[in-house]
Image (tube, rainbow, N blue to C red):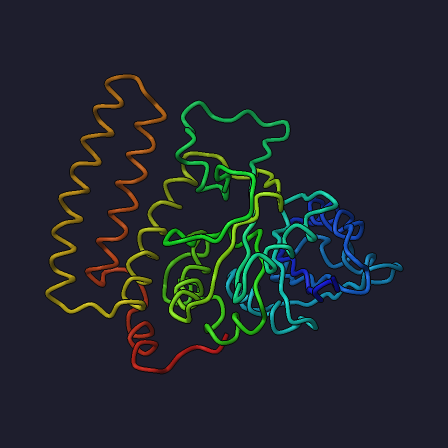
Length: 326
């Protein structure tokens, strides 16, 4: 079977040393060298990222592009990668990941599972390197660090739980374009640290009756660089803000519906704080932190739903038809 032509897009910001290791791994993939390229999108790094990439650009082997994206924000970077790509299939891998030599070939196999496959996601495992995993960081919080270790060893089409990890996925250029690209909530007043720029795209894929496939064999090891509790607190809050904005963009709920959701969220918020308190009394730090972060996320959601946080004029412009270009 002829190999699918794929552009491997690496989004990077100030991780020159990790990036160098990843580029070396991508250069030795067991994929035909004339069927893929590497596109590095630099979000205005101020370390030696440019020098690292330029060394690979001049070396023989799989072609490497180096592109600078001036708009800060991961969704801008991912979209710029799709715009710069030369091939009709796009594979995304983050700069703080490492992959084996079969990563790309495994990911590409997902498109052969069925007809009309638009998106393929791989497994993401956490790599702690020389760090020690904090005692308060339970398995429930690992997805917040990008982990996606679903059970099973065979590729499968995902149902309602279509979520894949943006840092280890592939999709067709046509799906990216027709679905409006990656829509990051930082464009509407949230923070870049809140994940989820792929959710809007996957929602549009579902509406177009496209398929999303999970391929366990396409493994990326995510090297953990952030693990402090303050980071998780900020992450939880801004994730809640993003959730509220995204819900508005997708569902255009009525005022009465929003009011009902706010009342429900207030009740849930109180319950989560109670759970956190009970877990703390039981000296179960992992559960206490988990429920506390869920409460903080819910608090951010409430502030977003009440329009107290976020760029709501821009969000309303989007809903009225003034969509941003991907």
